[in-house]
Amino acid sequence: MWDPRNTSEPVGTLAGHNGVVSGVHMADNNHLLSSSYDGTVRLWDLSSLRCLGVAESQRGNALTSVVPMGVSAFITTSVDGSMGLIGWEKSDEETMMMKGTTLHTFRAHSQALFGVGYNGKERLCSFGQESEWRMWFITRDRHPISLKDELLWNKRQE
Image (tube, rainbow, N blue to C red):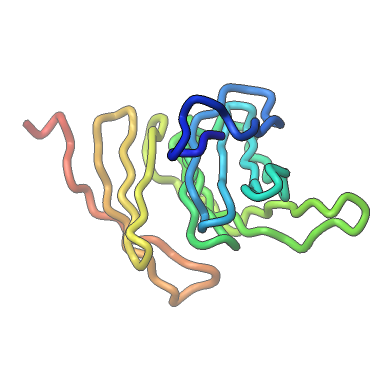
């Protein structure tokens, strides 16, 4: 971790993943999410540099990115082309660690997903190995949410 006001010295290290870190994203001003090819997402407290929770990929796949939907839930993307909606369960009393639970898995692309963007309200945009961009419209008519997609761009259409 680096302080942008002083880039000469790191302020600390977040250690815990057993594979390449594939993405990091601020969940809020005090928390960071990191995804890894080890198939986990970790929630970090930035003031203590402590891991608060671990979520494991439902299918054991390498996770290519993570996008928070606030601190309580996040979207993951995977090498199998799926997106997962993950929520945090209450802390384990013994370890005080939170556990991520898969709320829903969406089949998003036919090949590896490289990333997803979230506008903070009702839209996600995903892009994958098959050279497609998809816009996802979040609806809350079903529990927990449902997604309707629209193909925005496909390289094969050029």
